[in-house]
Structures are given as C-alpha cells and as structure tokens.
Image 1 (cartoon, rainbow, N blue to C red):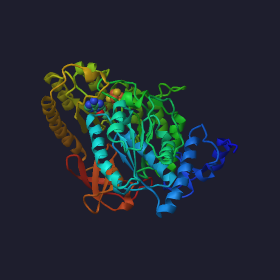
Image 2 (image 1 turned 90 degrees about the vertical axis):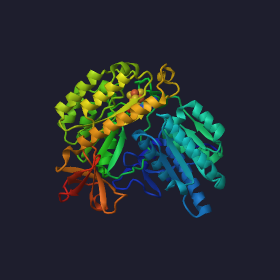
Image 3 (image 1 turned 60 degrees about the vertical axis):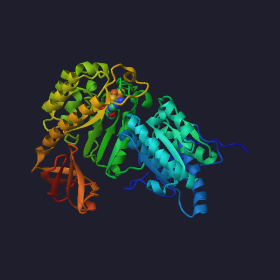
Image 4 (image 1 turned 135 degrees about the vertical axis):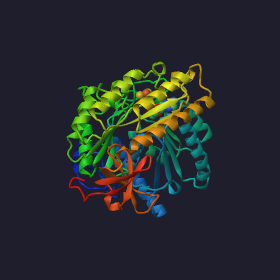
Length: 522
Ligand code: 5AD
Ligand code: SF4
C-alpha cells in the first residue's frame, strides 16, 4: 500500500480552534494543548507514516494510543487507568502535568496508584535519598505486577539520566516497561505507544537536547494557578550538584511562546503563574534576540487577568538591579524571593563554585529589603559539604541570623557520583554533619517563627488554594509572601483572592477569618 504523506499544515489549521473553558480535561473527541487550543486527534490518518515534525508526530501517537484505548474499553468494559507520581521539584511537577495531559488526551482515567493500570514515576536525583525511595517503590510494585501482569510501569525524570541507574533497573527490576529521561519528555506519547505495541521494555535516554517542543496537552493540578517553564537545564555546575548533568545545558523558551501560554492560562481562569527555571536570573541570555529575566517579568506583569506572579529559582550571582526594580514596581509580582545561600562561608562558596561571597550575598539582601521592605526571603542551605569546618558552619549560622529567613530548606550534603565534590577529600563524618544539621534547623525554625508572626492582626489578600484536609470546614490559602493561612470557609472560595484577617500566628502558618465580600478582580 502506498504510504500517504501526513500533511501537518492542513491538520493544524483544521484541527486547532480557539476554545475557552475552565476545564483542562475533556474526555472524548477533542483535547486542548497548552495554549488552550483544541486539537482533534481523531482527524489523524493512521494509515500514513508518522510525521517527522514535532509536535505533530506526538499528536499522531496520541491518536494511535486512542485507538488502543477503544479496544481496551471493549475488552474490559472500562477505560484504562493511569497514575503519575511526582517525586521532584516544581519543574518535575510541571512535567507531570504534561504527562497527565497526554494521558487524558489518550483517554486514560486519572486515578490513585492502587487502582492504576499504568504507573509513571517522575523521579528526582538531587540527593541519594530520592533514588533510594524509587528503589523502595519498585520493590513493592514488583510484587503487585506479579498479581496483575497487565500493569505497565514507567520511569522518567532526572534519576533516569544516570547510566548506572538504568543498568541497575534493567538488572534488578526487569519488569519496568518504559524508561525515559528529561530531554525527551515531549516524546511520551510515542514511547508509550511503542511500549503498548511491542510489549518489550522501551528505554530512550538522550544525553542532551536543544529542542523545546511546544503545543502538547497539559492537565493542571489547580484550575487557578500554574507553573510556566521559562527555561530548562543549568550551566552553573555547582560542585555538589548533579542537575547540570541530568538536565543538560540552559535553554530558554522564546518570550512570545511564554507570553502566549500565560495569556492562554489567564483566559482559562488562572490568576497566579510561577515562572520556572533552575536559574531564572540567566533567562534569555542565549536566545537569538537576547532578553533579560527582568524584561520578561515585566511583560508577564502586563497580562491583566494574572493577579500574582512568582518565580523560582534565583541564583544570587545573576540577580540584577533591574529585577529588583521591576519587582518593586508591580504589586502583582509577589514580594517573595527564594535565594539559595548553600553556605555562609566564602571559602566554601568558592569550592562549591557558587561565584559569590558571604558579603556579596548580604549586600543583595540589603538591596532587596531596601527596595521591597516587606519581602519574604527563603533559602536552601547545605551542611556537611566536604571540608566544612566548624568555623565555616558558624559563618552559615551568622548569615542565617543576619538575614532572618522566613523559611529555609536545609539539606545534609549528599554525595552525587560524577560531581567534583564526590571525589573531594575531607568528606564530613555523618555524626558531625547531623549535629550541625540539627543546630541549623533549630536556629532556622526559631527565626522563621518570629518572622512569620510579623503580620498578625493585619488583613491581607489570600489566594484560596485547598480544602483543608485536617479540619473540616477550614480552607487553606496563601499570602502573596507564600505563607499559609487556614480559615473557616467553603470550597466555593477556591481560586478566589480574598481579604483575610490574620488572627493568630502559629509559627509557620496563620489562623484567620474572612474579612471581605468577594473582590471584583478575585
Ligand atoms: N546534597 C545536598 N543538597 C543538594 N542540593 C543540590 N545538590 C545537593 C547535594 N548533592 C540542594 C541545594 C539546591 C537544592 C535544590 O538542593 O541546596 O539549592
Ligand atoms: Fe544545581 Fe547550582 Fe544549577 Fe542550582 S544553580 S541546579 S544548585 S548546579
């Protein structure tokens, strides 16, 4: 039979139509891509060869999988069920939303892990613990799969970019069906189809990529807020960190694509976006028409229906005055900066390859506080880095006291094979590191408790985000500075920005009461 050439142009023009609805997941014939445009997968010609161009190629494989779902439904009297289990950072969480979007487009029902026919683990590998957790889960899944041989297991994310991990999985967990990495997330539909069609283990790991594929479906966790990738990868090579090896070199998305996505989200009911990248402050440097993060932020701030903008993560070495100015100029840019310190010792910072000193860091904090007086500062700190002395550790405590963080993520140094720090002499004995860790934690918690209580008694806008699962009748929301507030209310408030009186500080959160009638802009 003569193979028809798939015409992507006509497909796109016929199949993409503007659609404005709240829901991101529509079962049936039509699905939306991340720009809120409708794609009709059932118009695909499956007798044709798969297109070579992306994302049309993935649309083709989604359509193929949809045919398989129809057969599955005939045989089993129900739709196949899938669960995507996220184990990593916000970047991973966003990737998981893309997997869920593709699975929804295929026709999978989204369920809890116990009921799933397909389980995808989106892994992290920043610290060794993350890897151990995955092996633990796999051990349990092996037994489950023996009872239900139709179950399919997929692994993806940062941990899969480590060759020794893939070898270990092949040897010790041969029942895993699908393994892919961080550079070919967009190929998920194609890889899933290969796995379904061939019934053998599919492994597809890329070393790096310069490709950014737009236009794929995406299913958000919250209808009112969303992460937005602005860049991928990291060029910094901090000496302890495995991220540059598993996420590859920095690649920025084109500003027009980011803005198109933000506008589509706003039309779809989103009021808060979080701009995501390993190092957002170096956004845009490698684009054909370079643009700074400050410029991008200002453009995002022009999108009227977006009421809150957050971003993550900032590297102190690239934090510009322009960024601080833009932050101070727009109320909708949340007064919160996550500014990883890692260590307060300039000597150690040099060995960590962080490219700033203790003094420079403290200067930045002064500048931020000067321009945005109420800004909340949060951070990441590592203790037990090779060669860390008690004096180095005291320098870290000194910065913690001087800055007064609103909260801090504290980590025990974890040796990551392949990083320069892993082969450094003077690895710190576990008991010494743990002792420093608990001293640091006590200090951080005491300061954070005091800092967090500074808004007690005020009435501040809160984005209502969750039904409180611990106490019936309570809702949970977030202040612009990221602190949580629990208050009496009902689920009808979800997604609204409401004024809440902060009655009582309980350390890391507030108990409050609604203090307004609905805002016009909420
Ligand atoms: N050990 C401990 N913590 C680490 N981080 C990154 N690599 C390591 C490691 N090898 C921490 C850093 C970073 C955060 C995301 O994870 O503090 O900011
Ligand atoms: Fe890792 Fe440093 Fe890049 Fe952050 S900036 S991801 S700590 S290498």
